[in-house]
View 1 (cartoon, one colour):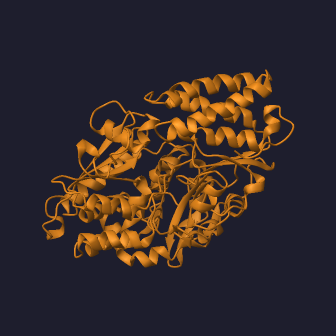
View 2 (cartoon, rainbow, N blue to C red):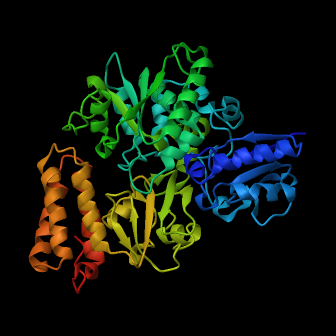
View 3 (tube, one colour):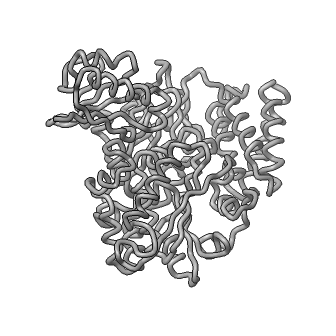
Length: 517
């Protein structure tokens, strides 16, 4: 009887040697005359344990990790295929504390199945949401998403149902669905994990969105730095066409939805929806003035839904189990779950999907295990390179959009990057200005010129020159960026700069803490 062994095909695991480990396992099994089925699954999201090898048993999947190529022979010697004891044995995967405490809805299949196996997807509740949607009126699909409380997981947190409803009620012969897969924020990788580990859930979510608003064409705008995601998506889309889940007659319903992947060229600003659409139209990625909103006049001037990967990948479970089911997770106006990505100076980096309401401290220490260096965590940046730096005094803030807004910060895409007490926060503020200057599309003056002047000012401040004058000028410049920029790139650069200045004044050569701006 064949024994199933799982080795991730996730690019994070591959970078740590998963391909070599998979090849070594196959070779050892052949040499020893053992019958195994090697499945390349997505990552479970525990990156400090990658490559994580799992063996299927009657009691569940047993995990071993992190496994390197020189560990493989020893695993076979210890009879790991039968659950034999080994120093790398971690026990049942589902019982691991890090994994067991999560609430996986969007990531329910990631790490469980072969990502491009449609049979595996269907065997684990896949396409049930689409089958329900095919029997529903468009307005009822939109209502289910609205009732769920789902908000944009790309960072803006705009209610998804309202956006869909606007597109539904805007008359047009052609409408579009765009998936913003240009995941460029520092410390974020949840989009990549979905696309590499469960691409069918994104395809299903986009198809449901198309049915809901009357769009027949969809585009996944994927960052070119994600070749493994591109490969998985392309294979899954081809299978979906071959099996009638995409095309002119979806599952015999007479309804149409077509989907293709388009690659971005690496501009951070194309993560902004209007720049993204400019790029899709074959133009330079420049921010558009709003209004008109993309939901009314978007791609090629037509009504367009633009949602993030996680937003769209959360739709199938809502249509399968109902809006109320999804809404029962979370707190306040932040409903459902959020995939949080732990990076930086932490012992246990990886992905945590859990309902809104957990505190940042619980996340950093309960899941992240504290700093990898063993030193105190001094600051945490949440929400990507434009997110504020939070000091230890704010670690008890619940992970909730409104709670974060109340302390002048953003939850964003859920990226969490931790720094210990050796970090220089003035240098981090300088980097924020430099990042904005490099990535600015150049369309508006505050972002184009202000970020460059800000970088120069930070250089002066870090050299201790005329601190009172230059810090006052920096605050004034941040006010201009905040209120005068055309999009969030310039408009949010003050968040990391001012938070570093306000919470860590000693790193700027200031003796007393300033009031929060």
